[in-house]
Image 1 (spheres, rainbow over the protein chains, first blue to last red):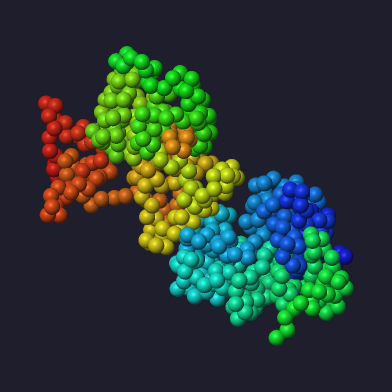
Image 2: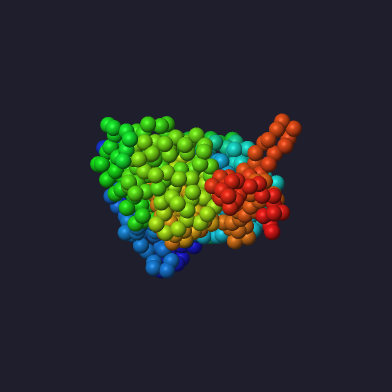
Length: 263
Length: 293
């Protein structure tokens, strides 16, 4: 997949991005390219700026210095800062997805599972109840939630089901880029394993580009093609996942890798 | 003229009325857009029509004829109090007849008799924000209006169909004004929604607690939201009005005894009385079959 790197346009290009909470910088001088179909893992300990970076990229925080370009069909790479707010929000609703760590942040808890999936369709102008419902049913099947749960509130779902529902809700408009913040956080290991299988299948089938923030190196190894290691707001090492994990160069990455639990 | 001394005409001072009129002008210029205004304390509790009263006070003149209805009736507490309030603070003529009124302040109904050019109907609004039930943050709802992100309104209708097999929302049914803003029509029954569409009269909405004014100018498009395969429908009754025999008006169910007896009567009392008015001026009881003749 690296052969056509030089000629292909990246889907997302980030240069010298930074963000500060008041005087306290949370991430600094982050630059990278993300290519179509690529899964980029961002790892690091708590407080290293991973989630802030993700929020900046996905437009949930107004970014500080630096630029983010996105390949918006058909006009090619555009600087997100030059888009109007309406265009940015449309992009977020259709071409992007955001899977939150806590499904309660990403789901509408007061409406049924079907409506949660259908919301994006209605937001882009779908006005046919039957169509919306059948698409929602297809997606529930896709994420392995029984159709008999379609009209139940997400409140009555288990954590793993809520997370799967959140994924379905994001993928229903066929986004090209998905941001995931600790998608397996708070789930027990067997549910985690199922969710990882599901994610891997969805990502491959739809050749999604994903930016995945996690502190769990095992998750990163399973899903990510490339890794970026962050410490104190800076990227200290990046490369292919296996390369970074098997032959860590930076002392901090070495510490991270050696801290992994072996069962 | 006013029979009360110590009050300005229509209770509010002139500067306040000017402020409200400015808000009204802006609201008329942007149909369906909620204009904030510096709502005043009125001598009645929030939820009783403080918004409607302020709008009425700002537009009323000595030559106006005022009608006030509550749930369609001219003789309910809220309607009587507000009508008397304006009679005492302005001295204008009041009426119960829809056709004779120039200003109609209403809670929960639009009169059955079609309104005409030159009339103004003023709605009392408890919750002006149609997106409120889906989105609690005001900063976010304002953004959604600005960017026309109205997908969530259909999420609510979707939930209705899932639960009840049809769109069960029966009052305060969301509408789109002039193809742009989604607007809460105040808690009128959806039976009245079609009357708002291209109405010749000016429609003003006042929300006192939330301090918002919005408007629909005459002859403006007002569409009720729906799905292609679940189109908008109004309520229907199997009965006709038990007093006047009208089969095309909005009916209230009235319990008449403790044996389960009940009757359906027009909610619009003026409409009902008008139909029953005999040549000699007395009220007749028309049975449904008489009305059909």
